[in-house]
Image (tube, rainbow, N blue to C red; front, side, top):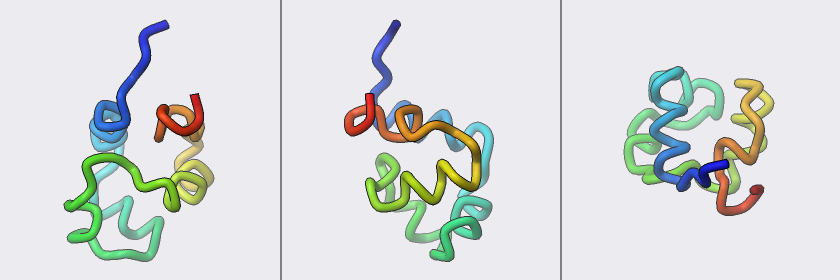
Amino acid sequence: MKKTSDRAAYALLLQDYTKTQLAGFLGISKQAITRWKAVPLRYVRPLSEKTGIPKADLLPSEFA
């Protein structure tokens, strides 16, 4: 199994969801999402719950 980087995992997330959608899920601004290079640890759980994407797929360095 190929290990995915945190940046690549974030890029995959953006293929399925817009920054506006992610901001809405989290109650933060779209501009805050624009500054991300990867999903911040504090947002992994709520994003996983809203999208159904496993935490290990959102932030592999912490959960794989």
